[in-house]
Length: 453
Ligand SMILES: *Cc1c(COP(=O)(O)O)cnc(C)c1O
Image (cartoon, rainbow, N blue to C red; front, side, top):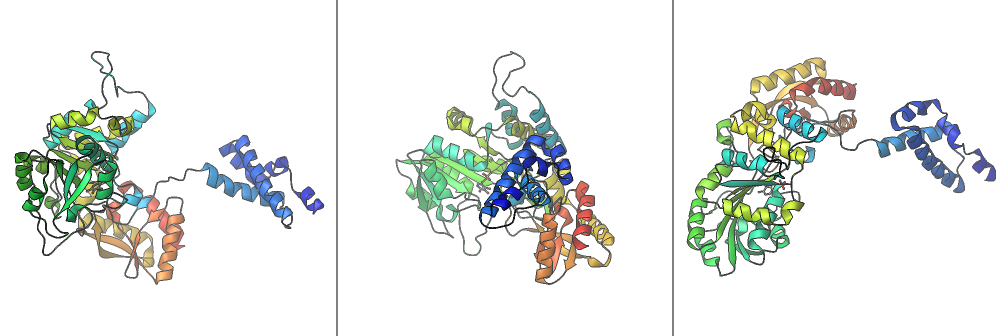
C-alpha cells in the first residue's frame, strides 16, 4: 500500500509526458498542471481503495480526457440534415449573413446602442427597432424583448395584473418547451377565465364571461398542433368588435409571426401580425427566431399607448435585448423593409428551395458515397411551433439498414468533429439537404465518409 502511494508519479513527471505538450500549448501550463493534480488525486483515491498506482502515461491519458470535458466549449456548431427548418433543439433559425455580421460587429466593438448621435445625449435602445417594426407590420408602435414568452408575460403583467383574462379552452394550451398559457397568466398575476370547450368556442362565450374585473381577451395561436373536425372559434374581427364595445383589450399571441404570406409557398396560412392588427388586435406578440428568421426575441406590436405603458414597466429592463440581438434583429427587419427577405433570410431560402436543387445536392452527396446511399423522396417540415402537419416535398440522401445499424450510424454522425443530425424513417437514415446550409456540403460529405468507413 505504502509503496503504491510512492509509485504515484509527480505532477512534473506527468507534465513531462510527450503527449501532453500539445495540451500545454492549447490550454497553458497552469491549466494542465491543475488538471494533472485532479487526476493524481483520483489516482491516490484509487490506490487507497486497493488499485495499483497509474503510470505517468495513464495519468496523462486521464488528463487529456479531463481537459476535453472541462476546457472545451460544450456549445458547438452542428449540421442540421433533419429537414426540420426551425429546429428548437438546434437553435431555431440561422441568421442571414448580414444579420450575423451585424451581431458580430456589435459584439466586437462599441455602438450607439443608447446614445443619440445628433444631440450627444443618452438615447434608448428601443429606437433602433421601433420605426422598423412599424414599417414592416403597419403597427402604431413596437417593442422587442428577450423572447415571445417574455413579451406575453410583460404585457399581461402590465395590463392585467390582478384582473381577469378570458381565453378559449382550446387555446389554454402548452406550446412546447414549458410555455403553458395558464402558467404564464399565473406568473403574470392575471386570473385565467377559460371559456368554451376544447373544440368549440363562440363569440357569446367570450362576451358573457366579461365582468368588471376583465382586462383582456387573449387569443393564442395553436402553433404546434391542430384541432380539426367539429371546431368553431370566432374571428379576430368579431372579437375585436366585442372587445371595443365592452372596453376590454384584445391581445393576440401569433407565435411564429410570419411577415410573409406562407400560402405563396404552397403551405397553409400562418397568422401574420399585420393581419391581426388590421383585424383589430390591440397588441400582437411573436417570436424573433421562428418564421421571422432572426435572433431570439419577442416582438410586441400594436397600439402606441399600450406599448408606451409596457415600456414603463420595470420588467422591460430585466427582459431587454442585448446589443447583438438588437443588431441582428434590426438587420433582419431591414431585409423585410427592403423587400429582400426571401432571397437573404436562410429559413425563407430553405422554404423556397426547389425540388431540382435539393435533388442535385442529394445526388452529389450520394455520388461521393458510391453504392452506400441513394436519393429518395421525403418531406421537410417547418418545426419550431409553426405550421403543424405542413410539409414541403423534398429529396434526401437515404442510407438503408436495420434499426441497430442506423442507430449506430446516427450516433457516429453525432460524435463527429462537426456533428451531423439526420432522421431515421422506415429503414433509412435520411439526410435532407433543405436544412443544410450550402457552404456546409463539403463538411457533411467528409463527415459521412468518416462515419461510413
Ligand atoms: C413559440 C411560441 C411561444 C414562445 O415563444 P418564444 O420566443 O420561444 O418564447 C409563445 N406562444 C406561441 C403561440 C408560440 O408559438
